Length: 297
Image (cartoon, rainbow, N blue to C red; front, side, top):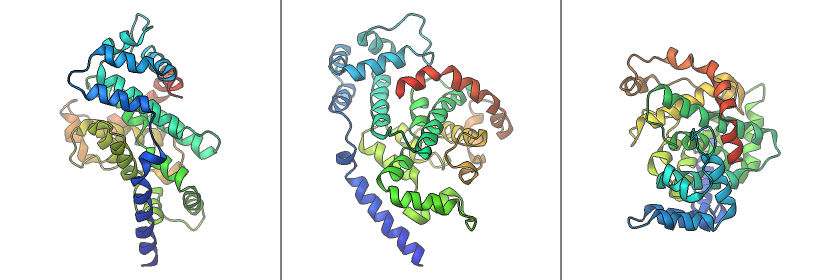
């Protein structure tokens, strides 16, 4: 009972902190301008170009990503106006949002933070790889959803760092019999997935990306884009099995088999064994997308 009361109290504390997230973790003003333009029905490519070009750092990030092998353009994209035309409003919006979130949390130094970022970038790359394997239409949301799937864990580790450190120490003690996910519920009364979903919602991310983050451990929950959520879920697990994880075996979960019918609508007779067989390709794909990863960092 004491543990339950403690987790309930901590949950209230986390929710209170999240209610102030837009003050604590405010995205740059230029990103809000990008959101206004991309959501406006009468906005033009010229309007969006003008706003992005007013921020040299964002301009450099977008051009760097646009010219990475991820998009595979043969001709170099040297201007924002060209990037807006070939990528489209939605993709530019996703890039502006995700690069800004990465900068908010990109605090190098601790071993855990470094491992967590490595995991997140890997999941972003592998989410897109799985989407391709399932014959999905390629879309930048796959990388962004995978990249940000553990943003809630970043929030907990950085803004409730004392309690998070205590939880990690408990997890690694010889007496511990609980997985990371159980301990997270015990210590915070809320999952990192829910925290991440709430954060992205407060930053006005597209609903399908917000849901992919919020339900990446519960892909069978009804969402706007169940295939997208399933891709993030699978990528997270495959990277963990591969050993690209900040939490070693404490993080391990199994693939939710209830998502298979959704995937089989795209690729006939696909099985969990087929998905696990993709693991040997992960290193190659991460290496192939190394320019994309460095563009975000």
